[in-house]
Length: 91
Image (cartoon, rainbow, N blue to C red; front, side, top):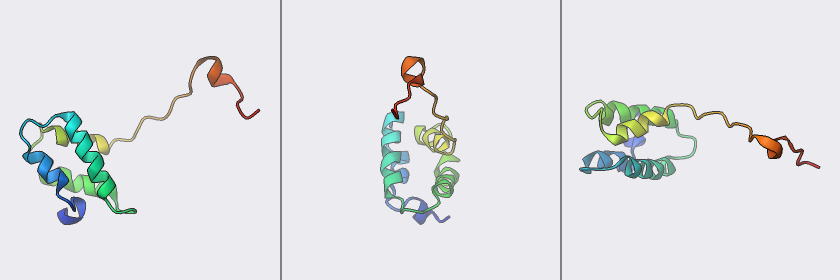
């Protein structure tokens, strides 16, 4: 994927230019970035392009960590324990 497609607004590029940016700020920028990606676009490919372009030269940057986290599968939801988890709410 081309960099212009992976970061159409340059949000991720700019995050790497902000001195002293925090992980929380990087997550916020990532969310803005994710919302700007067209529906149906291969998000994982875009993230890999961003890591290759910006993360390689900046492995310790908080945005690099956020991008790597974006490629990991989310944890499976766990059943809520106790009485509430066992109740049949469908009636």
